[in-house]
Amino acid sequence: MVRLEIQSCLDVTEKLLVTLNGQQGDKERTETIEEVNRLLTLRQELLPSLQPPFTAEEKEIGQKIVKMNQSIDTNLSEWKLSIQRDINGFSKKKTSITKYADPYRNVQFDGMFYDKKK
Image (cartoon, rainbow, N blue to C red; front, side, top):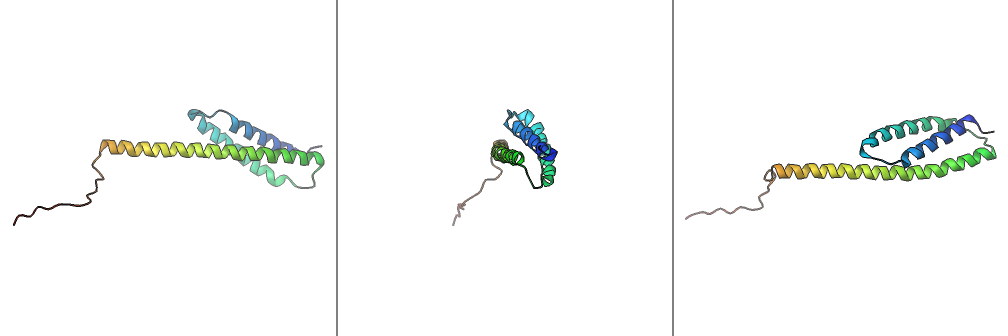
C-alpha cells in the first residue's frame, strides 16, 4: 500500500512534467510559468512529509520521481535559456532602435585637429 504523501508527490511531479512538455507559445508562457511555480511550491511542501521507512513499491515510485525530476530539470533549463534569449533580443532591439532614432548621441571624438594660424 502506497502512502498518500508519496502518491500525491508522484501526481504533482507528473503534472509538472506534462506542463513543461506542453507547447510554449509567447501568449501561454506567462500562464505556464505561473502553473509551474504553483506545482513546484506544492511539491516542495510535500517533500518533507516523505519519511522512511519505505516499502518496495514506494521505493519504485521514488525512483520514478527521480527520473521525472531529471527531465523536469532539463526542461526548466531549456525554458530559462529561451527566456534569456528573448530578453537579450529585446535589449538588442531597444538599443538598435535608440541608435536609429538618435545616431549621434554617443559619438566619441578620438582626436581633434586644431588649425592654428601664425
